[in-house]
Length: 260
Image (tube, rainbow, N blue to C red; front, side, top):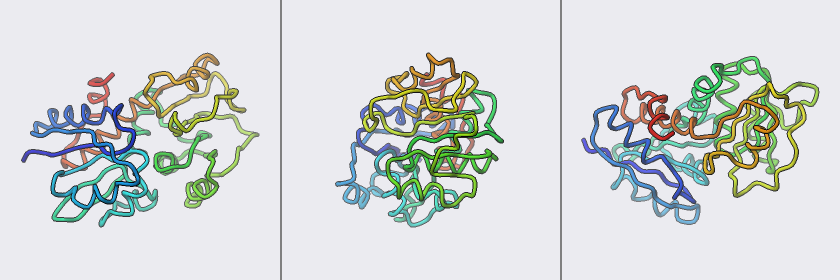
């Protein structure tokens, strides 16, 4: 089988998903290729209507994760709870949807910080599809609390609703063990001060990886925190994604080395 893969979203020119897909194909000893396709909300429906004729599977990135969820015919349990997908598989005219962002994030935490932060207090900036996937996986591995900061009250409520220990406000009396910024750089306001509750012992992750050190991440680096950008998570979520597509294990650490 010649696997026809791709990644869709907008903007998409910076995406390293095709390189990761092709590294995964080589690791699994499979044939195929992957390309970037700039697809925004306005032309998503037209694109996806015939995508099954041209692709076997697609990676989905911003701003399409929620609308892709709505078009899927079959959903994994985790995708159903999250309400967004980052992975599509086309089989017999139907779309299967899955979300590997949270699994990839937790595996990336273990790789970078040698812990998954179970029992910790977490702050998540943003409440979109990536944030909801990360929150879902953090709750599953047993964090004590998650405080969600987002501009959309509706999205924040949606992110918090499934879980008793996820809140749409700051828990100011608790130290922050981990802070995660899921907001695209293009949507960020001017960076302010280090968040209350952060100490040099806190871990800080910015899902952005272009540039490798955003102004937000630089601020926390200067404060003395342990930090990571989103490239590691991108690799680990791609490994989980391709493991689902190919039905064979793909090693996230090897994928990360291929693009770092």
